[in-house]
Length: 145
Image (tube, rainbow, N blue to C red; front, side, top):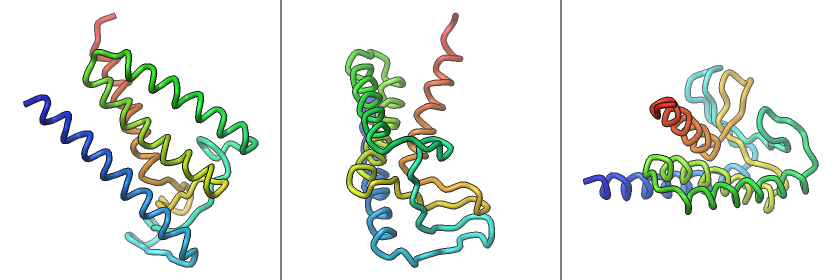
């Protein structure tokens, strides 16, 4: 049963990765596209993110190098880990990180497209990273000190 859950979770992660890549490509091709889901609260629109977390500006080459270092470290952790929950969390983080790295290499920025109250822009890859990090935090809290 657990193998089935893990396989389903990995499949879902792949589906979200493909959906994220598809949405980014479509929005990048038609820069004028804007869809209001909940007026003034939740919108889909193209936002070119040249920074990293919280739009912190760093040189593009440094951002790519840091991304590669982080992806390599997380991949090493994934290979060495024996904990299935940790592995699944790492797969989420890696999936999001790789999608955003592809953007940086191909476009020179990350394509964000989900806007909350016109203040913050994210994409599905960011959500995967966030969910993976959240899972790791909760796993840490579950383990005895």
